[in-house]
Length: 379
Image (cartoon, rainbow, N blue to C red):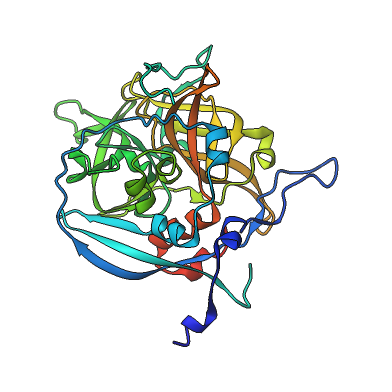
């Protein structure tokens, strides 16, 4: 009871506008794009119940298409506090096929620190000249930040965000109604140098081949998917919650990228975002790209980064100045979801969409990783 007395429940208006305390705007001619400070709420489990085992009967889809564009999302009514709690509740899938549902509470700590669905869509999400870069050679692939990108056995991409955790898109695991067939024995692939046979009779039986790479796979122990995705089923609401966290059965022993609360588009360095993924038109290649953000809502970033199915689940990141540590730092600020085709007054528009890590989503994902809300106060 003593611990609960430190919490104060907040209503929706406070939740929605839990935003920047100190902005990242220029103060002089030598301004550095700086990570803003945020008031991050606390999200903690309240009740966990067992569910029936899932069927794993959905077909894995490497992209999600929604007819609701920026103006549609901006005009949608704000959810109520109870609806937000419901969306941020989550299912956990375990490697033995069992699953649970967890209801959450949302608090602040007082006294502490602070319409054209029937029309065919493009199969290629390339805008004009293809600006993607395939990353070759172990000197790049095995070094940060490219080494944080991993491949899911369902065909998507993920990003290392902790010693045993991978952030990806929810639709890579669950289609909104059911878990995909490959989710029961989900694995995460890490690119490694391929070993080649040594010379017969030599003491060394094998040596790394610097020109060829292969995937080494680690099984997933459990998966968290927000109920906002499951209830939304990739519609207007569901698109905002297209993210999932995977916990591996053993540590991956690689450098990972921290998550962070997404700044507004005008706060991003050059207004650009970056991400790397395993696009399915370049099998076995890690593909890097960057582009400008075209529009945004509170939950989504709209851009036209060239991308193909398979890149879904990639961590969208930026590099900004961390004032507290006096150094530059990259952080994951979103999850690449996929393609949107939108008919705006009879004029078709194409967007690739990323889900923003808002203060609420940061608090949720951070708690999934650490299990301790005290470690999730700085977004």
